[in-house]
Amino acid sequence: MLQTIGIFQESDKRNKRKYRAVKGQQQAEGKTPGQALDSLEKLMTSEQKDASSLIVLQRFQPDALFSQAQIEQLQMLMTQFQNAIQSDDSFSPEERAELEELIEAEWIAAIARGATIVAQTSQTETK
Image 1 (cartoon, rainbow, N blue to C red):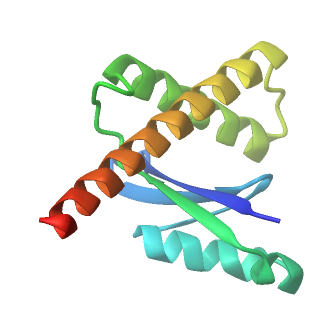
Image 2: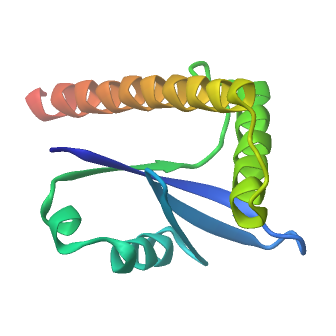
């Protein structure tokens, strides 16, 4: 079974950059994407570690596939979601649905970006 791990860039209260790795309900953070991923791996069971993983690193730079407005809304909802988890507050079904829609939209954009890179690489290699 393929598991997806998302790595998101965030800023803390002092506006320092940090990264959060998320796999389902599990999450961990670090100063770099690698640190966040390593911290998340420590939380995973051996069965989860043995499964194939696809890692998506979100750099949060707008492009034709995912706009600045979408990035800002995704970041806001991710922050609210993290705060809700940490403080045992509720995260409304509407907010969860919007967050899931934005994550899916970014996922589709990431796949399209990847396909473009593969196509460009293939063209370069055949020349």
